[in-house]
Length: 593
Image 1 (spheres, one colour):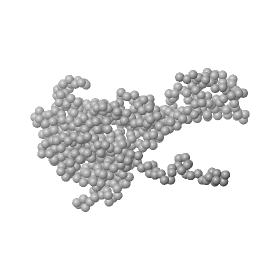
Image 2 (cartoon, helix red, strand yellow):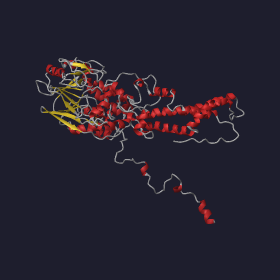
Image 3 (tube, one colour):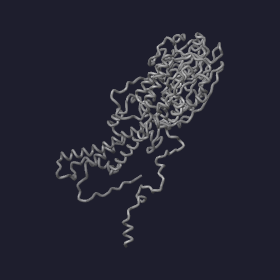
Image 4 (cartoon, one colour):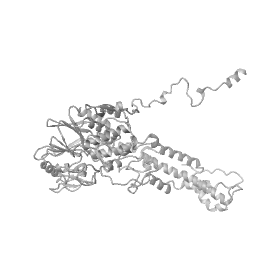
Protein backbone atom coordinates (compact mmCIF):
# COMPACT_ATOMS: atom_id res chain seq x y z
CA UNK A 1 0.00 0.00 0.00
CA UNK A 2 2.85 2.40 0.82
CA UNK A 3 4.40 1.77 -2.60
CA UNK A 4 1.08 2.35 -4.30
CA UNK A 5 0.46 5.61 -2.41
CA UNK A 6 3.96 6.83 -3.15
CA UNK A 7 3.63 6.16 -6.87
CA UNK A 8 0.20 7.75 -7.02
CA UNK A 9 1.40 10.90 -5.29
CA UNK A 10 4.42 11.41 -7.57
CA UNK A 11 4.27 14.58 -9.70
CA UNK A 12 2.86 13.99 -13.12
CA UNK A 13 5.62 14.00 -15.70
CA UNK A 14 5.46 16.80 -18.26
CA UNK A 15 5.65 14.21 -20.99
CA UNK A 16 2.27 12.88 -19.86
CA UNK A 17 0.54 16.24 -19.95
CA UNK A 18 -1.71 16.49 -23.03
CA UNK A 19 -0.17 18.80 -25.61
CA UNK A 20 3.33 18.71 -24.09
CA UNK A 21 6.48 17.43 -25.81
CA UNK A 22 9.01 14.93 -24.49
CA UNK A 23 12.13 16.73 -23.21
CA UNK A 24 14.40 14.95 -25.66
CA UNK A 25 12.31 15.71 -28.74
CA UNK A 26 13.63 18.28 -31.23
CA UNK A 27 11.08 21.04 -31.85
CA UNK A 28 13.09 22.99 -34.41
CA UNK A 29 10.45 22.14 -37.00
CA UNK A 30 8.10 24.58 -35.32
CA UNK A 31 10.30 27.54 -36.25
CA UNK A 32 11.82 26.28 -39.49
CA UNK A 33 10.32 27.01 -42.90
CA UNK A 34 7.81 24.40 -44.02
CA UNK A 35 9.25 24.36 -47.55
CA UNK A 36 12.99 24.35 -46.99
CA UNK A 37 13.78 24.51 -50.71
CA UNK A 38 12.38 28.06 -50.86
CA UNK A 39 14.86 30.52 -49.32
CA UNK A 40 13.58 32.92 -46.70
CA UNK A 41 13.23 36.59 -47.71
CA UNK A 42 16.07 38.86 -46.70
CA UNK A 43 15.13 40.71 -43.53
CA UNK A 44 18.27 42.84 -43.30
CA UNK A 45 18.16 46.37 -44.69
CA UNK A 46 21.54 47.46 -46.07
CA UNK A 47 23.72 49.86 -44.17
CA UNK A 48 25.33 52.88 -45.82
CA UNK A 49 28.53 50.91 -46.27
CA UNK A 50 26.66 48.20 -48.15
CA UNK A 51 24.38 50.51 -50.11
CA UNK A 52 26.87 53.09 -51.41
CA UNK A 53 29.88 52.81 -53.67
CA UNK A 54 32.27 55.57 -54.69
CA UNK A 55 32.50 56.46 -58.38
CA UNK A 56 35.57 57.66 -60.27
CA UNK A 57 34.89 61.27 -59.29
CA UNK A 58 34.59 60.49 -55.60
CA UNK A 59 30.80 60.76 -55.53
CA UNK A 60 28.44 58.31 -53.88
CA UNK A 61 26.30 56.01 -56.01
CA UNK A 62 24.05 53.09 -55.08
CA UNK A 63 25.74 49.72 -55.45
CA UNK A 64 24.02 47.93 -58.38
CA UNK A 65 25.64 44.55 -57.72
CA UNK A 66 24.49 44.53 -54.10
CA UNK A 67 20.97 45.76 -54.91
CA UNK A 68 20.54 43.19 -57.66
CA UNK A 69 21.11 40.32 -55.22
CA UNK A 70 19.31 42.06 -52.35
CA UNK A 71 16.13 42.58 -54.38
CA UNK A 72 16.38 39.05 -55.74
CA UNK A 73 16.13 37.82 -52.14
CA UNK A 74 13.06 40.06 -51.60
CA UNK A 75 15.08 42.50 -49.50
CA UNK A 76 13.88 46.00 -48.68
CA UNK A 77 15.69 49.32 -48.44
CA UNK A 78 15.40 51.99 -45.83
CA UNK A 79 13.18 54.88 -46.86
CA UNK A 80 16.18 57.22 -47.02
CA UNK A 81 18.06 54.93 -49.41
CA UNK A 82 15.01 54.62 -51.67
CA UNK A 83 14.54 58.39 -51.67
CA UNK A 84 18.23 58.84 -52.51
CA UNK A 85 17.85 56.72 -55.64
CA UNK A 86 14.59 58.36 -56.71
CA UNK A 87 15.66 61.96 -56.19
CA UNK A 88 19.04 61.56 -57.88
CA UNK A 89 17.52 59.67 -60.81
CA UNK A 90 14.85 62.36 -61.18
CA UNK A 91 17.49 65.09 -61.31
CA UNK A 92 19.43 63.18 -63.97
CA UNK A 93 16.34 62.44 -66.07
CA UNK A 94 15.28 66.10 -65.99
CA UNK A 95 18.51 67.05 -67.73
CA UNK A 96 17.70 64.87 -70.76
CA UNK A 97 15.77 65.99 -73.82
CA UNK A 98 12.25 64.87 -74.64
CA UNK A 99 13.79 62.98 -77.57
CA UNK A 100 17.02 61.16 -76.67
CA UNK A 101 19.68 60.23 -79.22
CA UNK A 102 21.01 56.69 -78.76
CA UNK A 103 23.99 55.15 -80.51
CA UNK A 104 24.32 51.49 -81.42
CA UNK A 105 25.04 48.83 -80.34
CA UNK A 106 21.88 48.90 -78.26
CA UNK A 107 19.48 46.45 -76.67
CA UNK A 108 15.87 47.65 -76.90
CA UNK A 109 13.45 46.34 -74.27
CA UNK A 110 9.68 46.50 -73.99
CA UNK A 111 7.28 46.40 -71.05
CA UNK A 112 8.48 44.99 -67.70
CA UNK A 113 5.38 45.47 -65.49
CA UNK A 114 6.93 44.69 -62.14
CA UNK A 115 8.32 41.28 -63.14
CA UNK A 116 11.70 41.66 -61.45
CA UNK A 117 12.81 38.06 -61.83
CA UNK A 118 12.13 38.19 -65.56
CA UNK A 119 14.06 41.47 -65.67
CA UNK A 120 17.07 39.57 -64.35
CA UNK A 121 16.61 37.09 -67.19
CA UNK A 122 16.42 40.00 -69.63
CA UNK A 123 19.83 41.29 -68.55
CA UNK A 124 21.24 37.79 -68.79
CA UNK A 125 20.04 37.53 -72.39
CA UNK A 126 20.81 41.14 -73.30
CA UNK A 127 24.43 41.16 -72.21
CA UNK A 128 26.66 43.38 -70.14
CA UNK A 129 26.40 47.17 -70.03
CA UNK A 130 30.10 47.33 -70.82
CA UNK A 131 29.37 45.94 -74.29
CA UNK A 132 26.27 47.87 -75.35
CA UNK A 133 23.58 50.35 -74.37
CA UNK A 134 20.12 49.56 -73.05
CA UNK A 135 16.97 51.36 -74.12
CA UNK A 136 13.73 50.67 -72.22
CA UNK A 137 10.40 51.73 -73.72
CA UNK A 138 8.45 52.20 -70.47
CA UNK A 139 5.89 50.39 -68.30
CA UNK A 140 8.22 49.36 -65.51
CA UNK A 141 5.53 49.18 -62.81
CA UNK A 142 1.93 47.98 -62.20
CA UNK A 143 0.33 44.56 -62.65
CA UNK A 144 3.38 42.69 -61.28
CA UNK A 145 4.27 42.42 -57.58
CA UNK A 146 7.82 43.77 -57.79
CA UNK A 147 7.35 47.13 -59.47
CA UNK A 148 9.25 49.17 -56.90
CA UNK A 149 12.20 46.76 -57.08
CA UNK A 150 12.26 47.05 -60.88
CA UNK A 151 12.10 50.83 -60.73
CA UNK A 152 14.78 51.26 -58.06
CA UNK A 153 17.15 48.84 -59.79
CA UNK A 154 16.69 50.46 -63.21
CA UNK A 155 17.20 53.91 -61.70
CA UNK A 156 20.35 52.61 -59.99
CA UNK A 157 21.73 51.46 -63.34
CA UNK A 158 20.82 54.84 -64.81
CA UNK A 159 22.79 56.61 -62.08
CA UNK A 160 25.80 54.34 -62.58
CA UNK A 161 25.71 54.28 -66.41
CA UNK A 162 24.04 57.57 -67.41
CA UNK A 163 25.04 57.49 -71.09
CA UNK A 164 24.57 53.76 -71.68
CA UNK A 165 21.18 53.37 -70.04
CA UNK A 166 18.11 55.14 -71.43
CA UNK A 167 14.67 54.98 -69.83
CA UNK A 168 11.53 56.22 -71.60
CA UNK A 169 8.11 56.86 -70.16
CA UNK A 170 5.24 54.41 -70.59
CA UNK A 171 1.54 54.96 -70.12
CA UNK A 172 1.71 53.31 -66.67
CA UNK A 173 4.28 55.83 -65.43
CA UNK A 174 1.66 58.24 -64.14
CA UNK A 175 -0.38 58.88 -61.02
CA UNK A 176 -3.72 57.92 -62.52
CA UNK A 177 -2.84 54.36 -63.54
CA UNK A 178 -0.62 53.59 -60.55
CA UNK A 179 -3.49 54.53 -58.23
CA UNK A 180 -5.92 52.46 -60.26
CA UNK A 181 -3.69 49.41 -60.57
CA UNK A 182 -1.24 47.99 -58.03
CA UNK A 183 1.84 50.21 -57.82
CA UNK A 184 0.55 52.72 -55.27
CA UNK A 185 -0.63 49.94 -52.99
CA UNK A 186 2.74 48.25 -53.40
CA UNK A 187 4.65 51.42 -52.45
CA UNK A 188 2.49 51.97 -49.39
CA UNK A 189 2.92 48.34 -48.33
CA UNK A 190 6.68 48.16 -48.85
CA UNK A 191 7.65 51.76 -48.12
CA UNK A 192 5.58 54.89 -47.51
CA UNK A 193 3.54 57.66 -49.21
CA UNK A 194 6.73 59.71 -49.41
CA UNK A 195 8.38 57.08 -51.61
CA UNK A 196 5.28 56.87 -53.83
CA UNK A 197 5.23 60.64 -54.34
CA UNK A 198 8.94 60.57 -55.22
CA UNK A 199 8.18 57.87 -57.81
CA UNK A 200 5.44 59.99 -59.37
CA UNK A 201 7.80 62.95 -59.57
CA UNK A 202 10.39 60.80 -61.31
CA UNK A 203 7.82 59.58 -63.84
CA UNK A 204 7.19 63.14 -65.02
CA UNK A 205 10.92 63.53 -65.67
CA UNK A 206 11.25 60.49 -67.95
CA UNK A 207 11.99 61.27 -71.63
CA UNK A 208 9.23 60.43 -74.11
CA UNK A 209 11.00 59.04 -77.18
CA UNK A 210 14.41 58.09 -78.56
CA UNK A 211 16.18 57.97 -81.91
CA UNK A 212 18.55 55.06 -82.48
CA UNK A 213 21.30 56.03 -84.94
CA UNK A 214 18.86 58.60 -86.36
CA UNK A 215 17.13 55.67 -88.09
CA UNK A 216 14.62 54.18 -85.64
CA UNK A 217 11.94 56.09 -83.79
CA UNK A 218 11.44 54.42 -80.39
CA UNK A 219 8.42 55.23 -78.24
CA UNK A 220 6.09 53.41 -75.89
CA UNK A 221 2.80 53.69 -77.81
CA UNK A 222 3.00 55.20 -81.27
CA UNK A 223 2.43 58.26 -83.41
CA UNK A 224 -0.19 61.00 -83.29
CA UNK A 225 -2.18 63.24 -85.63
CA UNK A 226 -0.37 66.10 -83.87
CA UNK A 227 3.07 64.64 -84.67
CA UNK A 228 4.39 65.95 -87.97
CA UNK A 229 8.11 66.28 -87.35
CA UNK A 230 10.38 65.28 -84.51
CA UNK A 231 10.57 68.91 -83.46
CA UNK A 232 7.01 68.57 -82.18
CA UNK A 233 8.35 66.20 -79.52
CA UNK A 234 11.30 68.41 -78.66
CA UNK A 235 8.99 71.39 -78.12
CA UNK A 236 6.35 69.68 -75.97
CA UNK A 237 6.08 69.88 -72.18
CA UNK A 238 6.61 66.41 -70.76
CA UNK A 239 6.81 67.39 -67.08
CA UNK A 240 3.16 66.75 -66.34
CA UNK A 241 0.53 64.10 -65.77
CA UNK A 242 -0.63 62.80 -69.18
CA UNK A 243 -4.17 63.76 -70.15
CA UNK A 244 -6.77 61.78 -72.07
CA UNK A 245 -5.95 63.52 -75.35
CA UNK A 246 -3.13 65.37 -77.03
CA UNK A 247 0.37 64.58 -78.27
CA UNK A 248 1.70 63.24 -74.96
CA UNK A 249 -1.30 60.94 -74.58
CA UNK A 250 -0.93 59.59 -78.13
CA UNK A 251 2.79 58.89 -77.80
CA UNK A 252 2.04 56.77 -74.72
CA UNK A 253 -1.30 55.18 -75.69
CA UNK A 254 -1.64 54.84 -79.49
CA UNK A 255 -1.69 51.42 -81.19
CA UNK A 256 -1.33 50.19 -84.77
CA UNK A 257 -4.73 49.24 -86.14
CA UNK A 258 -5.66 45.56 -85.77
CA UNK A 259 -5.38 44.73 -89.50
CA UNK A 260 -2.32 46.94 -89.93
CA UNK A 261 -1.20 46.97 -93.55
CA UNK A 262 -4.44 45.41 -94.77
CA UNK A 263 -6.94 48.00 -93.65
CA UNK A 264 -9.01 47.82 -96.85
CA UNK A 265 -9.56 44.07 -96.53
CA UNK A 266 -12.82 42.81 -94.99
CA UNK A 267 -12.35 42.83 -91.22
CA UNK A 268 -13.77 40.12 -88.93
CA UNK A 269 -14.84 42.86 -86.51
CA UNK A 270 -16.09 46.10 -87.98
CA UNK A 271 -15.98 47.65 -91.42
CA UNK A 272 -12.84 48.00 -93.55
CA UNK A 273 -11.03 51.32 -93.31
CA UNK A 274 -11.52 53.72 -96.20
CA UNK A 275 -8.41 54.45 -98.33
CA UNK A 276 -6.54 57.51 -97.12
CA UNK A 277 -7.57 57.08 -93.48
CA UNK A 278 -4.64 57.77 -91.17
CA UNK A 279 -6.11 57.66 -87.66
CA UNK A 280 -9.30 56.34 -86.10
CA UNK A 281 -10.40 56.58 -82.44
CA UNK A 282 -9.00 53.82 -80.25
CA UNK A 283 -12.07 52.21 -78.71
CA UNK A 284 -9.99 49.48 -77.08
CA UNK A 285 -8.01 51.96 -74.99
CA UNK A 286 -10.79 54.46 -74.47
CA UNK A 287 -8.42 57.25 -75.54
CA UNK A 288 -5.95 58.18 -78.28
CA UNK A 289 -5.98 56.58 -81.76
CA UNK A 290 -5.30 53.57 -83.91
CA UNK A 291 -2.80 54.56 -86.61
CA UNK A 292 -2.88 52.91 -90.02
CA UNK A 293 -0.10 51.58 -92.20
CA UNK A 294 -0.37 54.65 -94.40
CA UNK A 295 0.01 56.97 -91.39
CA UNK A 296 3.14 55.13 -90.27
CA UNK A 297 4.69 55.21 -93.74
CA UNK A 298 3.99 58.92 -94.16
CA UNK A 299 5.55 59.68 -90.76
CA UNK A 300 8.68 57.69 -91.61
CA UNK A 301 9.03 59.38 -95.01
CA UNK A 302 8.56 62.88 -93.57
CA UNK A 303 11.26 62.36 -90.97
CA UNK A 304 13.65 60.19 -93.04
CA UNK A 305 13.40 57.23 -90.69
CA UNK A 306 13.57 53.49 -91.23
CA UNK A 307 11.01 52.17 -88.73
CA UNK A 308 9.03 52.62 -85.52
CA UNK A 309 9.90 50.46 -82.50
CA UNK A 310 7.31 50.45 -79.72
CA UNK A 311 5.96 48.40 -76.81
CA UNK A 312 2.59 48.80 -75.06
CA UNK A 313 0.97 45.56 -76.26
CA UNK A 314 1.53 42.00 -75.07
CA UNK A 315 2.73 39.71 -77.86
CA UNK A 316 2.43 35.94 -77.93
CA UNK A 317 5.96 35.48 -79.29
CA UNK A 318 7.30 38.54 -77.48
CA UNK A 319 7.41 40.62 -80.65
CA UNK A 320 5.59 41.37 -83.91
CA UNK A 321 7.08 42.73 -87.12
CA UNK A 322 4.39 44.55 -89.05
CA UNK A 323 4.16 45.14 -92.79
CA UNK A 324 7.27 46.47 -94.51
CA UNK A 325 7.43 49.95 -96.01
CA UNK A 326 7.14 50.15 -99.81
CA UNK A 327 10.41 52.06 -100.25
CA UNK A 328 12.90 50.76 -97.66
CA UNK A 329 11.44 47.23 -97.43
CA UNK A 330 11.85 47.29 -93.66
CA UNK A 331 9.08 46.63 -91.10
CA UNK A 332 7.23 49.88 -90.64
CA UNK A 333 6.42 49.04 -87.01
CA UNK A 334 8.01 46.56 -84.62
CA UNK A 335 6.21 45.82 -81.35
CA UNK A 336 8.38 44.42 -78.55
CA UNK A 337 7.16 43.05 -75.21
CA UNK A 338 9.62 41.92 -72.54
CA UNK A 339 7.38 40.49 -69.79
CA UNK A 340 7.14 36.71 -70.38
CA UNK A 341 4.06 34.88 -69.10
CA UNK A 342 2.50 38.25 -68.42
CA UNK A 343 0.42 38.26 -65.21
CA UNK A 344 1.33 34.56 -64.85
CA UNK A 345 -1.51 33.68 -67.23
CA UNK A 346 -0.63 34.90 -70.74
CA UNK A 347 1.76 32.03 -71.58
CA UNK A 348 3.68 34.42 -73.85
CA UNK A 349 7.41 34.67 -74.38
CA UNK A 350 9.45 37.76 -73.66
CA UNK A 351 11.70 39.34 -76.27
CA UNK A 352 14.30 42.05 -76.74
CA UNK A 353 15.85 43.63 -79.83
CA UNK A 354 19.63 43.67 -80.20
CA UNK A 355 20.74 46.18 -82.82
CA UNK A 356 24.40 46.25 -83.81
CA UNK A 357 26.32 46.78 -87.04
CA UNK A 358 23.06 47.64 -88.83
CA UNK A 359 21.67 44.21 -88.03
CA UNK A 360 18.61 43.47 -85.89
CA UNK A 361 18.45 40.31 -83.82
CA UNK A 362 15.41 39.26 -81.80
CA UNK A 363 16.21 37.34 -78.61
CA UNK A 364 13.34 35.49 -76.94
CA UNK A 365 13.20 34.01 -73.46
CA UNK A 366 10.75 32.27 -71.15
CA UNK A 367 9.51 33.34 -67.74
CA UNK A 368 11.37 32.72 -64.49
CA UNK A 369 9.86 31.50 -61.24
CA UNK A 370 9.21 34.16 -58.64
CA UNK A 371 7.93 34.47 -55.06
CA UNK A 372 4.18 34.47 -54.61
CA UNK A 373 2.13 37.36 -53.25
CA UNK A 374 -1.52 37.24 -52.27
CA UNK A 375 -3.68 39.80 -54.13
CA UNK A 376 -3.20 43.40 -53.02
CA UNK A 377 -0.18 42.36 -50.94
CA UNK A 378 -2.41 40.90 -48.23
CA UNK A 379 -0.89 38.78 -45.49
CA UNK A 380 -2.33 35.37 -44.66
CA UNK A 381 -4.16 36.65 -41.59
CA UNK A 382 -5.92 39.48 -43.41
CA UNK A 383 -6.81 37.13 -46.25
CA UNK A 384 -8.17 34.32 -44.07
CA UNK A 385 -9.84 36.33 -41.27
CA UNK A 386 -13.20 36.71 -43.10
CA UNK A 387 -13.26 32.95 -43.67
CA UNK A 388 -12.66 32.28 -39.96
CA UNK A 389 -15.25 34.87 -38.96
CA UNK A 390 -17.85 33.36 -41.26
CA UNK A 391 -17.27 29.92 -39.76
CA UNK A 392 -17.56 31.26 -36.20
CA UNK A 393 -20.89 32.91 -36.93
CA UNK A 394 -22.07 29.72 -38.61
CA UNK A 395 -21.25 27.82 -35.41
CA UNK A 396 -23.07 30.40 -33.28
CA UNK A 397 -26.17 30.11 -35.43
CA UNK A 398 -25.92 26.32 -35.33
CA UNK A 399 -25.82 26.42 -31.52
CA UNK A 400 -28.86 28.68 -31.47
CA UNK A 401 -30.73 26.49 -33.96
CA UNK A 402 -32.64 24.56 -31.28
CA UNK A 403 -35.47 23.62 -33.59
CA UNK A 404 -35.93 22.37 -37.12
CA UNK A 405 -37.46 24.12 -40.12
CA UNK A 406 -40.71 22.23 -39.53
CA UNK A 407 -40.88 23.40 -35.92
CA UNK A 408 -40.25 26.99 -37.01
CA UNK A 409 -43.06 26.72 -39.54
CA UNK A 410 -45.36 25.28 -36.88
CA UNK A 411 -44.33 28.04 -34.48
CA UNK A 412 -45.26 30.63 -37.09
CA UNK A 413 -48.71 29.08 -37.49
CA UNK A 414 -49.18 29.04 -33.73
CA UNK A 415 -47.93 32.59 -33.20
CA UNK A 416 -51.36 34.00 -34.01
CA UNK A 417 -52.62 32.60 -30.73
CA UNK A 418 -49.64 33.77 -28.75
CA UNK A 419 -51.64 36.24 -26.68
CA UNK A 420 -53.77 33.42 -25.32
CA UNK A 421 -50.79 31.32 -24.29
CA UNK A 422 -49.18 31.38 -20.90
CA UNK A 423 -45.39 31.83 -20.92
CA UNK A 424 -42.94 31.38 -18.06
CA UNK A 425 -42.14 34.82 -16.68
CA UNK A 426 -40.09 36.15 -13.82
CA UNK A 427 -42.53 37.27 -11.14
CA UNK A 428 -40.62 40.51 -10.67
CA UNK A 429 -40.86 41.47 -14.37
CA UNK A 430 -43.57 43.74 -15.63
CA UNK A 431 -45.02 43.24 -19.12
CA UNK A 432 -42.93 46.19 -20.31
CA UNK A 433 -39.73 44.66 -18.90
CA UNK A 434 -40.59 41.36 -20.53
CA UNK A 435 -41.12 43.04 -23.90
CA UNK A 436 -37.79 44.87 -23.61
CA UNK A 437 -35.98 41.65 -22.66
CA UNK A 438 -37.63 39.76 -25.49
CA UNK A 439 -36.59 42.42 -28.03
CA UNK A 440 -33.01 42.46 -26.69
CA UNK A 441 -32.69 38.69 -27.12
CA UNK A 442 -34.12 38.92 -30.62
CA UNK A 443 -31.74 41.76 -31.57
CA UNK A 444 -28.71 39.76 -30.43
CA UNK A 445 -29.65 36.76 -32.53
CA UNK A 446 -30.39 38.95 -35.54
CA UNK A 447 -26.99 40.63 -35.05
CA UNK A 448 -25.28 37.24 -35.34
CA UNK A 449 -27.15 36.64 -38.61
CA UNK A 450 -26.11 40.02 -39.96
CA UNK A 451 -22.49 39.42 -38.99
CA UNK A 452 -22.60 36.14 -40.88
CA UNK A 453 -23.67 38.00 -44.02
CA UNK A 454 -20.90 40.58 -43.51
CA UNK A 455 -18.24 37.90 -43.13
CA UNK A 456 -19.56 36.16 -46.23
CA UNK A 457 -19.17 39.45 -48.10
CA UNK A 458 -15.64 39.96 -46.79
CA UNK A 459 -14.69 36.40 -47.67
CA UNK A 460 -16.04 36.82 -51.17
CA UNK A 461 -14.13 40.08 -51.63
CA UNK A 462 -10.95 38.48 -50.29
CA UNK A 463 -11.13 35.41 -52.50
CA UNK A 464 -12.40 37.23 -55.60
CA UNK A 465 -9.56 39.76 -55.62
CA UNK A 466 -8.36 39.68 -59.21
CA UNK A 467 -7.57 41.92 -62.13
CA UNK A 468 -8.86 39.33 -64.57
CA UNK A 469 -12.56 39.29 -65.42
CA UNK A 470 -13.83 36.11 -67.04
CA UNK A 471 -17.32 37.01 -68.23
CA UNK A 472 -18.13 33.35 -68.88
CA UNK A 473 -17.63 32.35 -65.24
CA UNK A 474 -20.28 32.68 -62.51
CA UNK A 475 -19.77 35.46 -60.00
CA UNK A 476 -20.70 36.14 -56.41
CA UNK A 477 -20.53 34.11 -53.21
CA UNK A 478 -22.21 31.11 -54.83
CA UNK A 479 -19.49 31.11 -57.45
CA UNK A 480 -16.82 30.95 -54.75
CA UNK A 481 -18.49 27.86 -53.33
CA UNK A 482 -18.87 26.39 -56.81
CA UNK A 483 -15.21 26.90 -57.67
CA UNK A 484 -13.55 25.68 -54.50
CA UNK A 485 -16.22 24.56 -52.04
CA UNK A 486 -17.61 26.42 -49.05
CA UNK A 487 -14.96 25.16 -46.62
CA UNK A 488 -11.83 25.90 -48.66
CA UNK A 489 -10.02 29.19 -49.12
CA UNK A 490 -8.98 30.21 -52.61
CA UNK A 491 -7.83 33.03 -54.88
CA UNK A 492 -9.85 33.75 -57.99
CA UNK A 493 -6.73 34.48 -60.05
CA UNK A 494 -5.86 30.79 -59.70
CA UNK A 495 -9.35 29.69 -60.67
CA UNK A 496 -9.46 31.90 -63.77
CA UNK A 497 -5.88 30.96 -64.61
CA UNK A 498 -6.85 27.30 -64.83
CA UNK A 499 -9.34 28.13 -67.56
CA UNK A 500 -6.83 30.13 -69.62
CA UNK A 501 -5.33 27.81 -72.19
CA UNK A 502 -3.90 30.26 -74.69
CA UNK A 503 -2.67 33.78 -75.24
CA UNK A 504 -6.02 34.72 -76.79
CA UNK A 505 -7.89 33.49 -73.71
CA UNK A 506 -5.73 35.72 -71.53
CA UNK A 507 -6.32 38.74 -73.75
CA UNK A 508 -10.05 38.17 -73.50
CA UNK A 509 -10.23 38.09 -69.70
CA UNK A 510 -7.78 40.99 -69.40
CA UNK A 511 -9.40 43.25 -72.00
CA UNK A 512 -10.98 45.55 -69.42
CA UNK A 513 -7.54 46.49 -68.10
CA UNK A 514 -6.34 47.74 -71.48
CA UNK A 515 -8.52 50.84 -71.24
CA UNK A 516 -7.73 54.20 -69.73
CA UNK A 517 -9.60 53.97 -66.42
CA UNK A 518 -12.23 56.52 -65.60
CA UNK A 519 -11.24 58.95 -62.90
CA UNK A 520 -13.05 58.52 -59.59
CA UNK A 521 -11.89 60.72 -56.71
CA UNK A 522 -10.96 59.07 -53.44
CA UNK A 523 -13.70 59.07 -50.78
CA UNK A 524 -13.51 62.00 -48.38
CA UNK A 525 -13.61 59.69 -45.35
CA UNK A 526 -11.16 56.83 -44.88
CA UNK A 527 -12.40 53.34 -45.53
CA UNK A 528 -13.21 51.65 -42.20
CA UNK A 529 -12.91 48.13 -43.56
CA UNK A 530 -9.86 46.98 -45.55
CA UNK A 531 -11.01 45.54 -48.83
CA UNK A 532 -9.36 42.45 -50.20
CA UNK A 533 -10.55 43.16 -53.71
CA UNK A 534 -8.77 44.88 -56.56
CA UNK A 535 -10.42 47.42 -58.79
CA UNK A 536 -12.45 44.80 -60.59
CA UNK A 537 -14.20 42.70 -57.99
CA UNK A 538 -16.16 39.91 -59.61
CA UNK A 539 -19.11 40.15 -57.23
CA UNK A 540 -19.93 43.71 -58.11
CA UNK A 541 -22.29 44.67 -60.84
CA UNK A 542 -21.83 47.81 -62.88
CA UNK A 543 -23.99 49.66 -60.41
CA UNK A 544 -21.62 48.74 -57.59
CA UNK A 545 -18.52 50.12 -59.24
CA UNK A 546 -18.51 53.32 -57.18
CA UNK A 547 -19.03 51.59 -53.82
CA UNK A 548 -16.15 51.16 -51.41
CA UNK A 549 -16.03 48.34 -48.90
CA UNK A 550 -17.68 50.35 -46.12
CA UNK A 551 -20.63 51.16 -48.39
CA UNK A 552 -20.98 47.52 -49.42
CA UNK A 553 -21.02 46.40 -45.80
CA UNK A 554 -23.59 49.01 -44.82
CA UNK A 555 -25.82 47.94 -47.70
CA UNK A 556 -25.39 44.28 -46.76
CA UNK A 557 -26.46 45.03 -43.19
CA UNK A 558 -29.56 46.80 -44.45
CA UNK A 559 -30.57 44.04 -46.85
CA UNK A 560 -32.50 40.94 -45.89
CA UNK A 561 -30.46 37.75 -45.86
CA UNK A 562 -30.84 35.01 -48.45
CA UNK A 563 -31.69 32.36 -45.84
CA UNK A 564 -35.45 32.58 -46.33
CA UNK A 565 -35.97 34.37 -43.00
CA UNK A 566 -34.81 31.40 -40.90
CA UNK A 567 -32.68 33.58 -38.61
CA UNK A 568 -35.52 36.04 -38.05
CA UNK A 569 -38.01 33.28 -37.21
CA UNK A 570 -35.46 31.56 -34.97
CA UNK A 571 -34.85 34.81 -33.10
CA UNK A 572 -38.57 35.35 -32.66
CA UNK A 573 -39.11 31.84 -31.29
CA UNK A 574 -36.23 32.04 -28.80
CA UNK A 575 -37.23 35.52 -27.68
CA UNK A 576 -40.82 34.42 -26.95
CA UNK A 577 -39.58 31.91 -24.40
CA UNK A 578 -41.23 28.57 -23.66
CA UNK A 579 -44.77 27.75 -22.71
CA UNK A 580 -45.61 27.23 -19.03
CA UNK A 581 -46.73 23.58 -19.00
CA UNK A 582 -46.93 21.18 -16.14
CA UNK A 583 -44.81 18.53 -17.77
CA UNK A 584 -41.91 18.47 -20.23
CA UNK A 585 -42.91 18.79 -23.85
CA UNK A 586 -42.43 15.65 -25.89
CA UNK A 587 -40.02 15.63 -28.78
CA UNK A 588 -41.59 15.71 -32.21
CA UNK A 589 -40.54 13.34 -34.92
CA UNK A 590 -40.11 14.52 -38.50
CA UNK A 591 -39.30 12.54 -41.58
CA UNK A 592 -35.79 13.07 -42.92
CA UNK A 593 -34.73 12.88 -46.52
